Image (cartoon, rainbow over all chains, first blue to last red; front, side, top):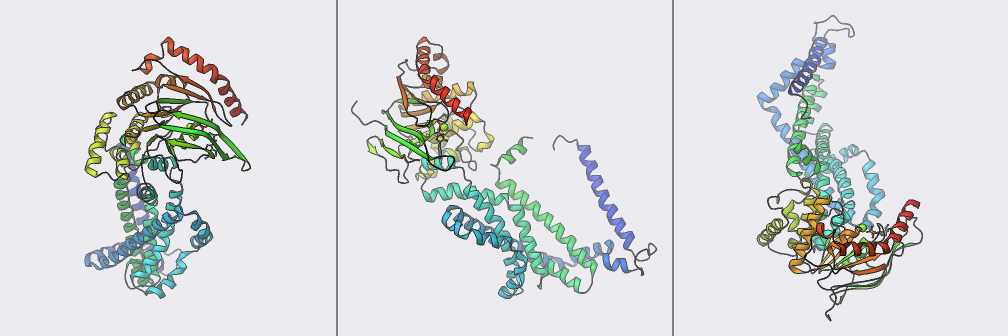
Length: 274
Length: 272
Ligand SMILES: Nc1ncnc2c1ncn2[C@@H]1O[C@H](COP(=O)(O)OP(=O)(O)O)[C@@H](O)[C@H]1O
Ligand SMILES: [Mg+2]
């Protein structure tokens, strides 16, 4: 990557921006009422009704941030995501460690884990709404069910694949069972948790937004839900744009955290050198 | 000498479930191996004959199918307890990749409840002794193969074990690094005369380092087929000693015993 000339990078960026602008312009031209003669819909404002208008969408986004209306919703969604991620990861880590270290328990639970993982967990949302109400916790619960399995499977696999030589070495160095857990199994499992970090955070976010969308009073998902019931397509698109940007920011934050925590990994080492 | 030997493996037999799942494979059969306190013993044998298996038994990591092990006269129980008097350098990388160099060196002290400040001080001292001072905050993946071996050596020796078990520790290194490491090992050993059980498939390495070389037969049912006392003068330089007539005579003598076994092992591997 580093060998690619700078000018190439610049040109690449230019084309990427150009593509975005082209799409936006096409969108605008095709949907602005009366700009082009109608060729598909009978009425001039129909295209705008179905596909929204980029300028109005941008206006709505600016509006949200200028009035500050969006911040409380973003905050709620962020808190739900963070809670779902934290609870799901810790639960996945603990249960993954437990089952990874206990062949008996994992053999007994194996079919049920497979079943729970193949179940489309979004269908649990109504149940969570009944259990936890329409507030934040039903969204967190949905996110947790998504995050848990990703982390759980990674940790479970990680624990069973701990190098027997590293284990034997630690035993020869005097580690007892508890020390093996804290000095070998846990760090090794943690590295697998980090490996699934992007997926886990992404799914926590999905859980939060989908939960909000299925019934809530706050959050960006709620904004979209509300706009949809009034056929306000511009606001729906504005919500989607904000969610996408937010997801990208979240992912960038995860990458930063990952860089800091995973310095010992070979991949990080190689990119350091090149 | 009437003192109990450092390590006594008596009539050791190790069987494993065979690869096809039915029956058993006898890796080691009726092997007796005694290492006196302060003695440097090498075990040579063709690849796959059961050298690592024997060493794992000596370390208490693997319970033999039959036979007993005594450590300085104490019988070993094999009930989840490893050989507390021994340090083990493994054939493959055994460093914890998530710990930096100083974290790896001090791991044993940490497990034994030594305070952090003292552990760090002794860790830095050992890094210096193996030529790695200044590399304390590097992770294993950032170190070369030779540096990782030196780190593993420091990790083992910091606990000052009475017995040192080494499983082909230098076989993955290039010739120059290897000879440097062998000389360093001899210097460290000369300083406090630990009992060493050194596994290798390299006969020259075995002769250059040891007081005694034990040759093993090819598997299955590996057993010692020769015991050679190497009375070459010390201190030795592993690069120079290879040219001496005494060394060559030992090499010829031991190779004559081993040749057939190596060919047997090779034929068996070809057939498999
Ligand atoms: N845990 C095990 N299960 C089954 N077979 C094993 C096991 N450990 C070693 N063996 C077999 O025992 C033989 C000796 O292995 P090993 O001691 O590693 O040889 P060496 O170290 O001399 O190369 C080999 O044939 C190997 O396949
Ligand atoms: Mg071996």
